[in-house]
Length: 149
Image (cartoon, rainbow, N blue to C red):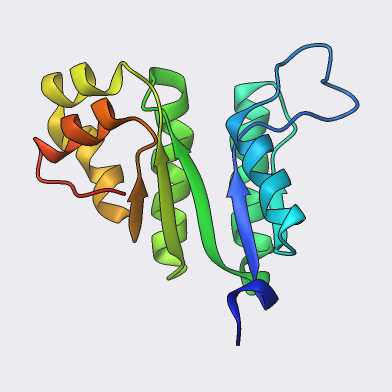
């Protein structure tokens, strides 16, 4: 079956009619639009601005829509609050035997990797593929033995 016939799950924070005056358009929003324009079938989660509600929404979507997608794209910022969602969502995706594409963002990740490598590398090691839009981040995670595109 061709990839375009399979759904892709994207986690993150997405702009909606209810939150458009509260948040800015995110990288996840932009990626969703590019995939849709190129005729991919995509499930996105979440529109919840509150981090606790977003975590619940993401985890429930991962679980209850697991029969509808094979690949999940997860943004990886590694910030204190975001790490909790990223860690648990990648654990659940791995348990469900899904392919995980991590998109690494966030200039603070190198210092977090230096201070607590085991914690932050655990998420990176769950990924099927890692994408680093930043050559700087690509270099920094390579220093920890992690390859990326």
